[in-house]
Every structure is written in C-alpha cells, then in structure tokens.
Length: 604
Image (cartoon, rainbow, N blue to C red; front, top):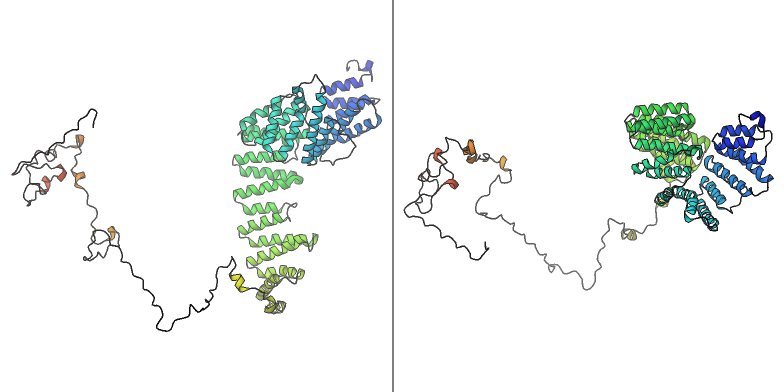
C-alpha cells in the first residue's frame, strides 16, 4: 500500500490504518485516520480503538458516544461495551468521577466494566457483588452453546476471577485472594496481559517473603507483547515491583538500573527515588540517601512532602534530631497539623530545647487565630500550649494563653486557678483581684456521704466504728477483767553436737578468712611427694615409696593388736597411713574367712 499509494489513493485508508493498528504502530494508525478525507463509521470505530490504546480517554468517549447516538446496527452492544470500558479506565487511571451514561448491564462484559468503574471509585463491596453477577451471566450465556467446554468457560471467567481476587486483596483478604490468583495462573490463559497482572499481584502479596516464588512469577511479567496489552500505570507498577524484588534479593545493580529507568520515564514521580534511597540505606549509605532526597525535593517541590518526611526519618536514624525538626517544619502542607505539632514538640522536649517547642506552639496558634479563630482545634492548641509552659515552669509565658481560655469559658475554675498561680509570680494585685472570681468554700462543698464512700470498693482506708454495747457484753467491774495470756517464748534451736556449757566463739559470725586464728589452708603433702618421672616415679623416691621396706618402720599411728604407745619418726620416713601395711606382732593375724560363693548357674 505504501508502494502504490498514488494509485490506490484514499480507497485503502481503513485497511492501511487497521494493519498499522494490528502491528502495534498506533501512532502511525492515528495519523493515517486523521489524514483521511472522509470519516466513515467503520473508520470511526477504528479511531476509537486507537484512541483507547493511546489512553486518550476523553476523546475516545466522545467518539463512542457519537457512534452510539448516530448508529443502529447489530454492533450496538459492542459499542456500549467499549464505552463502558472507557468509563472504567477513566475511573481507575485518571480518578475521574463516574458519569451515568445510561449503559445497560445485560451482558457479562458490561457488568464487568461497571464493576471496574466501581473499583476506581473505591466502592469495593458493590464492585465485588457486580463481579459475582458478571460471573453468573457468563456461565448462563456460555452454557447454551454446546460446543463450549468447561475449560473454555473457566478460561473466559479467568479475567473476572482475577479482578475478584484484586478486590479481596484491597479488602485485606489476602489469603483468599492468593488462592484465587493461583487458580488463574494454573489455567494458563492465552491473554499475556492477564497473566502479567495476576503474577504481579501475587508478588505484592509475597512482599519480602517467599522470594523464590516471586522470582518465578516475575518471569510471567516479561512475556512478549505485554507492553501492548496493559495501561501505562499498570506497566509502571510492574516495573516498580521488579525493582523492589531486586532489592529484596540483594541484586543492587539490577535495582538501581530499574529504578533509574523508571525515574527517566516519569521524573516527577517520587517512588523510583524512594527505591534508590531504600537500596542506599541497605548499604548503610545514609548520607548519600539524604543528598538524593534533598536534590529531588528541590527539583520537584510539588512532590516534596513525602520525600521530606523520609529525609527527616533518616536524620532521626543518624541521631540528628534538630535537623529532622528543621526538615519537618519546612513542609508547609503539614506544618500546622496537630500530628506534626505533637511530633515537633516531643522531639524538641527530648533535646531539652523548650524555646523551640514553645515557638512551634506560637506559630501554630497564630495560624489558627487567623484561619479558624475560636474553633475547637484552636482552643485545644492553646490549652496544650499553656499546659506545656506550666509544666516547664514558664508561668509568665502561659498567662496570655490562660487568659484567652478563661475569656472563652469564665466558669472554668481550673483555668482560673492556673491563671492566678501564674499571676502570683508577676503581679500579685492582679492575682488577688482574680481570686475574687473563685467560688466560696460553701459552694465548692459537695454533698458526699462519707460512710458510703469509705465502704465503697475503691476505699483504701476505712474508719473503725465502736462496737455496740449489749446486755450480754456489758463491761466487767474493775478487778474482774480478764487477764491477758502471755505468750510463751519458744527456745531457739541449737545446732547438732553443740555443747551448751562451752562458751561460743566470739568470731563465729565472721567469715573464716577474717578470723584471728585463721592460718590459711594447709597444702596437702601428697602433691609434694608425687614423683614426676616416668609413670609418676623418681629414682630418689622409689625406696621411700616401697611398702615392703617400710613395713618394719616405726608406725605413725597405733596399729591394731599392739601397744597404745607410739613414737615419732623423722619427717623423711613418714608414709601416709593409707600406704602403710601392718607388720606382724606378738600374735599372728588371722585371715578373715572368705564368703562362699552362692551356687547356681549364672548367679552373681
């Protein structure tokens, strides 16, 4: 057609544009259609599909609305289905409000598109019910065809089931969603776009867990032709999850490559930068991460709020609390929010920088004084500022806040008492004049039943009441009162083998080492006499250790059967008692009779 364009002229405009459309040359197809001299209905149908692929949804909606209004043929239901798809895409990808175009929901395609539009509006329960309705319509419509098998029905329902799982995931029902996603994957549908979206959603459920399964699923998102089946935001979400998966699997270079590519595609989007910062933090490069965040916030101030919050968190990780506070105070969007004020005051108090904390209160009160004077948020902030100043002894600075609160509610006795206490340090006359507004003691007395209060469950002290005197319990006359029995003192138990007549040791309560008669532990003589030669013996000590040569030596202790007297021997001839053998004396020793072994086979 390009070769013979002069000969063919405008007769093949539709055919040429359709070929370009099917070859995914969408921009060329658009130029061919727009250059056509006449816009036929058939060309307009193709024009609408080209605009939808280019995500020019407003123009696409105008084309299909005009076609439905001016055409009446057998393709009317398909045009309405395409228009419903355009409305759903506008709701999901452009956050556009829903328009009631009067589209029916008679087919499962129309019902499915209506459910997708509800998902974009956040109406998840209604969307799930609509998807169930679409599933029923699909089964009914396909059941009438005898050529359609159960596998064909499941394949047709795969897109509906995947969308139902997505709704479950948004509702927090991740286990049910994961089960349904896996069922869709097992069917192996021919639509590569459906497989890619389902696999991506499984990866988001796995997060940093079950990484092996995620690495298998990510291959499905790289199938050929996926980029022509999905919207630009869907492709960006898949690429973001690929980068996060690379970070969780410690593929630092791959993570940087993917995040840099995403940043070049959409420079103002903060998520690619946040992924790069997360990777740097995993590598302990916090200073480089802060520089990257600072650079992005200066280049894109419209997206700086979340970036600055991350920057403040990194400063806190490094222990730079003051720098974190400075970054937080630079966020104009959150500067006067109650949560931000609370965080700043807490951090300044931790750093004992009370002046900066009071300055935060001052700026916030001035903002609410000009924007919302007298509002609940304004008065609550003044109350917190006054309590904070009183807590840290800044009573003079708290006077203006307390006066403002008291003027708003003159019956607030607590605020008045605080105000008088603060003025007592600055202006005693003013304090006295204000004290006249305090109620009298009589008006402040409460009607409280003391007995009931003491008998309540929360009473910690109960006054004892005097017992009533009856006839049986009359007091006895003097001298006839009962004599109190004296308790017998129990004698203390003495330790065993204790001689009660002996005087106890005065130093018995002191540790043994601190007693006057302690001489230290005696080192055993056995260690000194053990030989250090071969097998524990030496040549010089062998004679001393020979028991046969020491049998006739004088004993060191009385031997049995001998006289009780004993003599001492030189220290060199001393043999330990357990190594001595008794020598024969006046009477020969009888051998002890041996016990007879018990009979029996196998006995012990």
